[in-house]
Amino acid sequence: MKCPHCGSSSTQKRNLGRKMGGSVGAIAGGMVGITGGAESAALGAAAGSLIPGVGTLAGGVIGFLVGMGSGAALGAVAGESLDKELFDGYICHACSLTFNHEES
Ligand SMILES: [Zn+2]
Image (cartoon, rainbow, N blue to C red):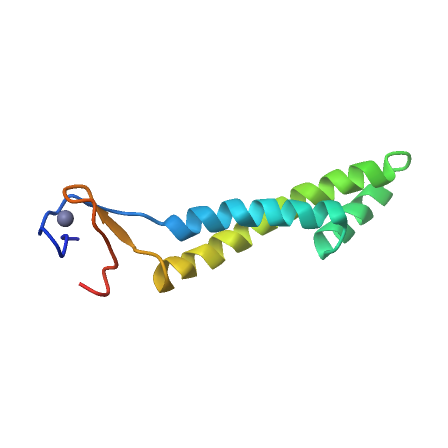
């Protein structure tokens, strides 16, 4: 991919949205798992109830981990589509221009 500004081939794909989406998704998914508002928490509670004497605490931890994992995956998918729609796809190391390959 060549830079549309200076023509340098020293460009790199950024994937900014996917990275951000993964981080935000992991945090949001973990919070959902803790507060028990989604199916990840229900799954954690169900898993916790299978183990006598461990119950709610383990269920909450499992719910948090499941929520974090699925949240990160969902966030990465959402972020990847944001990469295509909103964020600049490439950066030029020669002139620091960010650009989207579809516009060049
Ligand atoms: Zn450039």
